[in-house]
Image (cartoon, rainbow, N blue to C red):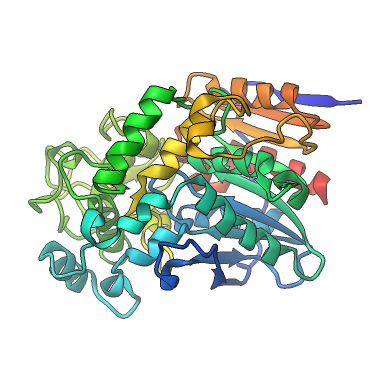
Length: 440
């Protein structure tokens, strides 16, 4: 009989995490991706960051969210492989990360060298319309074909594979499970879904046929990449985020090097002089970060209120060092400099998961296998969508043939807290751990 488990809201709940054993092995590697006809062969690859023991018999493959890279999973992936015996976590970069010039973010460079290189605009900047027009075709089909090759690689050696993602990455995971790969449903490649504050079936915006045509036409004649920061180049969020995180890691208590940098939008500037670490915390904390960028919010802490420069005081769920860890690391990082607009369009069109949806048909999407999908579902929701994440997950459960679902509502969390929060009060970590253990 199909069953579901409903975990109650945890506004006043906290817990003590398990003791942390020694860090597990980490490595990065490439997987040969889909051979997209118009794309130069060097971009038909995806990079994966692997966490956990070589002896693991289960792999949790995680897909990042909107304008996010594989590095965004690093804090929570390290915690997961400590708590779930026999688990590896594979965090996947999309193919567009190969366009980034991260040469001055390597370990041997100093933050000052990075600021001179990126702040001085000496790095290779990609003009999408002129230099990467092939990325106009990097939509859901290309993303899922790349992802399938990662999943098949994860199966090698007889390992079991669970698929998950955060935000738009969770929507991608649902699309994968329902996708038709030349007659084979995607759900047959995996044994469960882990949806972290995202999904389809109304979780995020859908689109009409008229809007889909208009957006597709705009992509086909313009820049294929999306800009997170209005008025700035598409690469600005990645460059600013990683530079700021590099200073926060290497020069945490020094006066902020970016606070007076002309490219830094005024909405990220504290009203008083602050340290490098404090600028990073200020830029992501829900009480000080721009209200238009809720996708970046955490419950972090606050400025110290005294000192020159003022320091950052951790006091919420996510310590500032975890933000820096997620954003500054190579060869993967936490922000996708060149995010393909076509992927968002396709996922908006796929949101109803209906074979008769006219926008899906126009775009050639193949999300045909919802009703026969047989996968346990774990769905975790923060305050971001006002309940739409769990409504979408419950619709996914009702309309599929899934045997059970676990729903977790955490309204005290911001959108990125489950990935970067400290283990001792990360309710996502606490609740997904028994779900994964049960699969094992």
